[in-house]
Image (cartoon, rainbow, N blue to C red; front, side, top):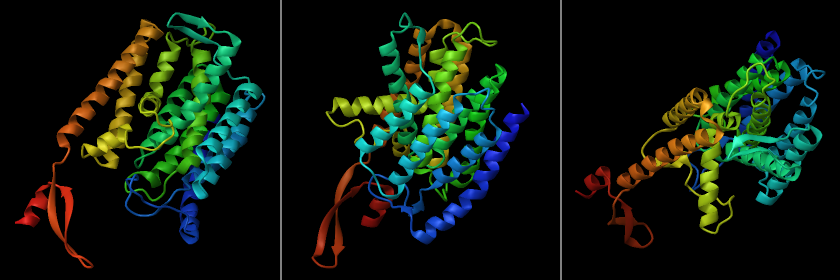
Length: 376
């Protein structure tokens, strides 16, 4: 237990000390995330916060983790280095979705093949228990890549991806402490401490963003932890077995995971690339309903906490039924958000505006109270 507290403290301290330096260097070198029509921030903000997260996480893990007990941790760190350089290049130079996908597959390969981390059983979900080796490998790769991208895509408003990442790593870390897997708990709390330090600078108004470096790194470690959780909690030999382990693990990652699967489904249905940009994410729906960044992050974090509590309480229902309950709750909430957004959709009208070059011109603007007052 002392190792876990030490890892949490060291990772927090390193990230907390590193991030202000990163902010100053980014300002000197003009390394900003520039606003555009899709982004919700209004001024240039540094997007290299993932450097600070990686520094705290890697240093604490290397210093504290017992590699003789957690023999696979070295491979998880190697995969984290791949994701770190992949995200850093994307944050500075921008890389194509194909190159990003190839890098994610390489990281997944290191975790699954070298680290021997694989989902071998669905523990009764849809009546499936043990899986054929080929299907198990394919499903494990899919799980890692989808979770990496889920945190990358949910990072749309201040504090959201960090809050959800802190929640997932802390919950998995607490479980691993409970079952005596201290090396895995150190891995989880090293990431949790780094995220906690980052959130001090990222909650609205944000002074820095985590960028792809941070969001994909959180996704990678969350993928490792959820697969370990499913394999450990689903075993009857562990000291704290959890019925419906896949569904409970899914609930811990519910908001980023289900939102990504939903958005991917919409894009594929519209015959677009799953990685093409749009404004269909859950945080966009809440923004359109008038919520600010802080309230969105707190609301979705609370929603995910309630889902985790409900999943633990209902874990004896079995994986299939519990997964159906989780899906129903999430998509019911999405339906309410769409309904409220439609009610708030502004009516449009044409107004006269002064154009310096062409004289009077016409412009379509939302019909708001301020706009109406300007016309009087």
